[in-house]
Every structure is written in C-alpha cells, then in structure tokens.
Amino acid sequence: MVIDVSDSLTDTDLAAGFRRDPELFTAVHDRYFRDIYRYVAGRLDLDVAEDIAAETFCRAFGQRDRFDAGRGGLRAWLFGIATNLIAQHRRSEARRYRALARLPAEHTVGSHEEHVVTDVTAELMRPRLARALTTLSRGERDVVLLIALAGLSYEEVAHALGISTGTVGSRLSRARKKLHKTIRPEAFHG
Image (cartoon, rainbow, N blue to C red; front, side, top):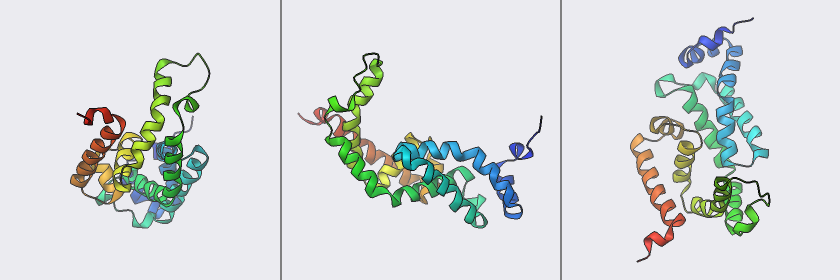
C-alpha cells in the first residue's frame, strides 16, 4: 500500500509547497474537485459543470503564486474562482431559471408512480424556486448558493467573494426575505 504524503498536509502546507513543487497542486485538485464540481453543478447545467470545475483548477494553478493564506483557506479561494467563472455564464444561468419558472408544474414532475412524496414536492417547488432566484441580485444569489449548495461558512463566502462577513449576512438576510416573499406570496397578502 502506497501512502500519499500530501494526504497528511494541511492546506497551508500545500499552498507553501505547490509554489516550489507544482506537482503538489494535484493534491489540491484531489482534495477539492468534488466539492467545486457539486457547487458548479448546482448552479449550472451538468453539461457545463465539469468544464467549469476543471477551469477553476486550471485558473487556480495558473494563479497559485498569488494565493494568500492570510486571506483565507484554499477551499474558499477555489470557490471564489468558481463563482467568478459562474458569473461569466450568468446570462445563461438567468435564462435557465426563467425557462424553468415558465414551465407548468406538471411538466417538471416525472410520470413514474414510484417517486417518493418528497421528490414530487421538490419537483413541484422547482419552478417557484427558480422564479424566486431570479428576483435576487447577482450578489445575493451568489451568497445564497455558496451557503446552500457549497456549504461554505459566512467567513468562507466572504473570502470567496472578496466582501466582508457583515455584507454576507446582510445579502443573505435580504435574499431570504425576497425568497420567502416569492415562494410564499400568500403570507404577504392581508
């Protein structure tokens, strides 16, 4: 059994090491590709997710000398790069959400009777959620999706987007109000 020394290295060790030995960047890829891919796949089509995730690591590799561990961890840095790449595709993302929002609920649910009730409910909510996401500003949408899909903390989101944690909190608060109002509009009518 071969033991990979890079598995025992911390992110800080990796960052210091991959400047001297670019081969160490493979460990960064191995450690975080799945998380980045899942985040991108949650934001964009699956067809694009692998390309965007791969591009995230290509850009990170090219910018590895500029990584500053004092500003945050590798994970947040990678999510920031991925979020910027997603922003380049945001027109496509917004068109996709608008198209999903226009679909009647009966077209979004599969016809298989063996669907679990939670799956059916989630599918019925998809157009409403998609419509709600289009009401958010780009900054609000990025914060919500980095927290919901990527599972980043406020601090990691702040680092990824280059904003303060207070701004993360205020964007999330505004986004929650907008989402709640769009998803449950009956709660806002007398």
